[in-house]
Image (cartoon, rainbow, N blue to C red; front, top):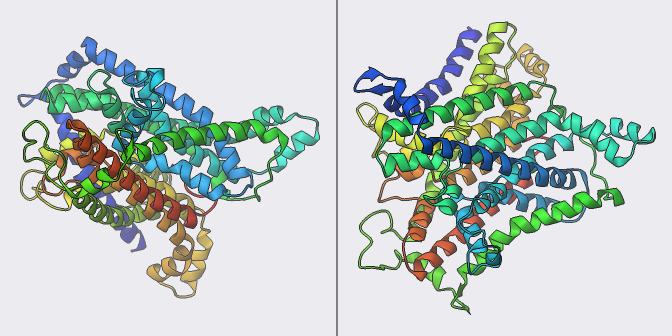
Length: 550
C-alpha cells in the first residue's frame, strides 16, 4: 500500500511536467520533423546544411566555451575567498556577487551597453556591438554560478589532507594542484557544465548586445520564429539544442554520482587570510569590481540626463513612455512601468508557490531509499527529467505553449496562470537542486523510528523532514521568486498584452527611440535589480552553509 502511494505521488509531478513542458516542446519539434503530415527527418538535415546554421552553431559554441572558461577562472578564487576565508562583510560581498545571476537578462544587456557604449566609461575600448561584449555579459551573468557551486563544495572540504601535505613540505601551489583541485573536480566540472548550458541558451543578453548581427542558436530560433516565420528551421535548431542539452545533463549527472563533499557538510570555521591568499584576494577584488561596474553604470545612467542630475526617468515610470515618431501602437508598451512591476510581483508569487510545491514533491521522491536496481534507475531518470528546463530553449518552450495549448480542454492562452506556470518550470531545477542534498542527507532511520512510535507518513514528514528542510525551502523560494521576476525568454511569447511583466516592458522601452524611453528603461532596470538584490540578501540570511548548488 505504501509503495502504491509512493508511485502515485511520483506520478503527480510527472503528469504536470508532461502537460506543461514535454507537450509544448514536443509540439515545437513536431514542426520540424513532420512536414505536411509526413515524417520528414530530411528537413532537419537540410536546415543543418545551411551555411548560416553552421555559423550560428559555431558562434554559440565558441562564445559559450570562452565565457565558461573566463567564469571558472574568475569564480574559483572568489569561491575560495568568500567561502573559506573570514573577513568583515563577507556575507554582504557574497550576496552582491550573486545578484547578477538573478538579474533579468534584459537588464544585464542594458547595464553592459551603458558601460561599453560610446558614451560609457569603457566606450573607448570599442567593444560595444562586438562578440567581446556578449562574452562579457555572459561572464557577468554566470560567474555567480561558479562561485556558489564551487564555494559550497569548498566550504565542506576536509582540511586535513591539505594540512598533511603542507606538513610534508608541499608548497601552497602544490597543495592546490595535488590535493584541493582534485577533490573539487566534480563541483568544478559540474559548475562549468551548467554555465556552458546557460551561455548556450542565453537569450536576453545576446539579443540585447548582439542584435541581429551576432546570433546564437537561441536568438536564431527567435528570429526564425517571429521574423521569418520559418518554423521547420526553428524546430530543427531546437532539436539540435535539445540533444546537446540532454548530453550535457547526462554528463553532469555522472559527475554528481561521485562522492560529493557538500552532502557530508563537515564544515570547518573560515580562516583568517594569509599572505599566500593574496593572489586569490586580488582576483576576487577584480571580480567584484567587474560585477559592480555595470550595475553602478546602470544606476548612474538612470539619474543623469545631458550632464545633469535628474529624477525625471523615475517619475516617468508612472507613464507609458515617450510617443516618438507619431505613435507606438497599442501593444505591450501602453502600460505604465509601475503597473508592469506590480504584474511581475504578482506573477512571481504564483510561480514561486507552484515551483516550490512541485519541486518539494520531486525532491521527496528522488531522495527516497529504493532497494531495486530498476527503482534506482527510475529515480535517476526522474531526477534528470526535471533538470531539462535548465537548458531547453525558453523560446522553444514559450512558442510551444502557443501552438499546443490552444485547444480545449487545454486552451490556456488567455489564462492568467499561463505565465506563472512557465516561470515555475524555469525555476524548478533550482528548487530541486537546493532541496535534494538536504532531504538526501537525512538519516532514514529517523523516519523509521518515528514510524515505529506510531507516526503516520505525514506526521513523520512534519517531525523529521520539515525541521531540517524549512530553511533551504525558504532559500529556494527566494531564488525562485528572483528568477521569476527576471524571466524574459518564454514570457515574451505568452504574456498577455494587458498584463506585461517588467522585463518585457523594459525590452520594449529599449527598442523605442527617444531619450526618455531609454532613461525610463534604465530606471525600471534599477528598480527591478534592487528588488531582486533585496530578495538575494534575504536568501543569504537563511541559507544553510554547505547546501545549495546546481
